[in-house]
Image (tube, rainbow, N blue to C red):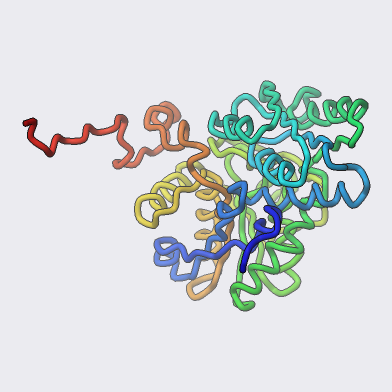
Length: 344
């Protein structure tokens, strides 16, 4: 018999998918790592598992304990899914601007959800800083321990990608990978994969959404943000602990106008329903491919399912209000099914 002894064994080992149109347009082989195949349906399951295992190893968390985190959604979902399978409860602090689908998923998974206004990190009531204080309070009364997952500055996050994502990409491509690129939220995925693959000669790129400040930091040495993006869970304005010591070989600034047509094309022509961050990543991979030239192999991350953003990303009215491109196939209303049988 073949079976997984527990849910945690299903995290990682996700397949690579050749992205047909992106590859054809650039003359390169552009591969997407299908992180939506994880149990919690996102790349953040990897960080969640390593953060939990690290806390257990340090004696900070015992069965029945509580995991607290401030998250735009996917890390919270990963913590809730993996945590429940290992006997832990979760409390998630989330900005009220995040998609309703992610909030509903967190509640469905049994997490206690605390919604707070979306304010900058420097504000003490920013969702990340609020979650740290909340974890400290819960720890005072939790007999089995309570931890603040602290995904942004907990380097167990980065370690997950040093030990799993990077080596998987190297093995799956048989070492024939020329570049890797993705956006940054906490920084764990990009810096972790870079730590695993840069020493092997793989070029590493940052795909930064508008409104984030890392592009200007890595290209000009200053934190400067311009514009904004509807993408969720990515975009950073500081060097987190996970990013310390990291330096990309390439950095690109990607707008929603660049990314969304890619998301819609992947849905219509390749059957991949993905979130906005995946569009940012693929757009970045195409930019890197053009810079490296034809014949190279570029890998990026397909972060999560587009179903988590249906009310925004696939909402014709929302997109029009934001002045963003709307695909022709995205109908405003469900078409009526024609009558095919005669009434007797």
